[in-house]
Amino acid sequence: MCLALGMAPAAQAARQALVIGNAAYNEGPLRNPVNDARAMDQKLADLGFNVTKVENLRRQQIGRTVKGFLDALKPGDEVVFFYAGHGVQVKGVNYLPAVDADIQGEDDVPLNSLNVNNLLDKLAPAGGGGFVGGSTTVIGAGVEPARPV
Image (cartoon, rainbow, N blue to C red; front, side, top):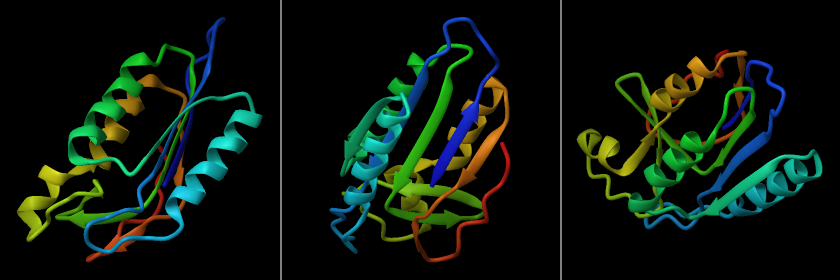
């Protein structure tokens, strides 16, 4: 998943990016997400973004990492959020599970995952519109197609 937002113009606008590559899942490990995240990290850095790149986030880390990133954003910042890893949808809500997610049923998903819908809601007031797209490996029901922010 890649989310790029051009926020409202400001004199001291910064280019900020959060890049996550989750591959070392307890259930269903993946081969490419960390490599994809590293490649995106390099490309975004080449484009002048201040990149925060993290790999194989556990339950205790995923929410704190995203919250810390969001809290550091300033009005006018250009923002990119890139995620490579598993994705899951439950009752119309999209989630990005932590690598140590213990998901035995639908009720376990919110406790072990980042809620993408909430992330988009938190970024939307920043303004400017954006793009959501990219690739996740989907578990169970399909994640809905990209939608404008």
